[in-house]
Length: 380
Image (tube, rainbow, N blue to C red; front, side, top):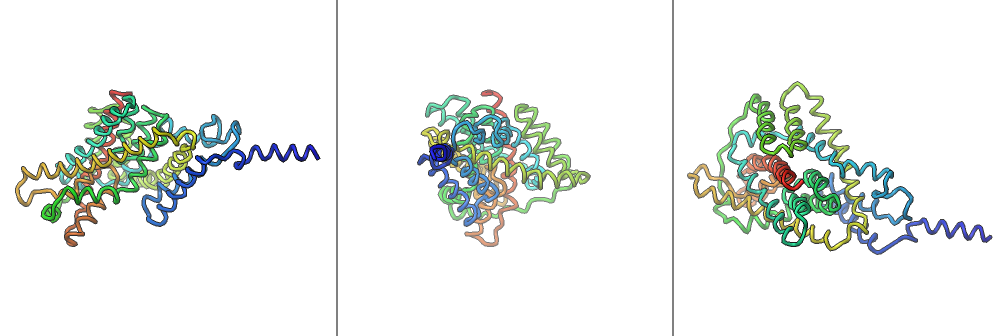
């Protein structure tokens, strides 16, 4: 009988109930919230469902030393998490992004790349704010990249500069990507007047297939020579686009933008979510990172809209840019461009801004990778 009781006591010690802490419940509740929002609101479900479920997985209370936790060397979750910690997954995501991105809007209106560049000020503004709050320069750089609204880039840079903060940075970046419509719309309305929102832009010119095929080669050479440290992201982005536009590697392009990116996105979401283990994640620094991440996103959106208003002062009537596409300078493709379209049609249902907003939107993808390369160059 004593042996049975002893065995039951030992079994109890290994259950989640015996190792439970309120912090675990808090993180599980957040994970369930992510899943609920993704399903009911359809906000970035491909990201929030894996991240939310990963939070639940990572916060099941367990007895130490069982070799199943994400931070225990040799566990399955730990092995899968190496793709995040070592920065393997983000370049593969960029390969898929390149293979599904049409750069025609940017090629036809090259001036729109300036909007994408202006929006990257959110990254450097948040970098300075993080320094002011006492973060080390490398940590501040990793936090600042949240302003690019680019989850893979945030993971890549934080894996190099601040791996201990990666969970908070990655969850923050993906959370704000999902909240693009909620965050950006009020800023756009605050910074523009009715006349500006009604500006009609001339239709972009048709782009030839030859131009679209040459662009990834020229784009890569230009950006890689400026920031060689961004090569893993920029190289894969433009390579994926070349697979798409060359017309002779269709199978490779379909694999890159389909099964490959789906598998890697699932692994990133699940392992990033699992990395939010309560004892590692629920800290004052994590909450501060979330706050700075929001500020960086606000700064990026603000700079994009204000930059358009600035250059409009020097443009003739008929050539002016609708400042509602300024928000699309962040890298959340195509969600921020859709916000431009939706807000624009609220004031003029016949004014379609999506085709114009895609220009700064894809420029933002390039811009965030370049910004990451710059930060890695002088902080790495």
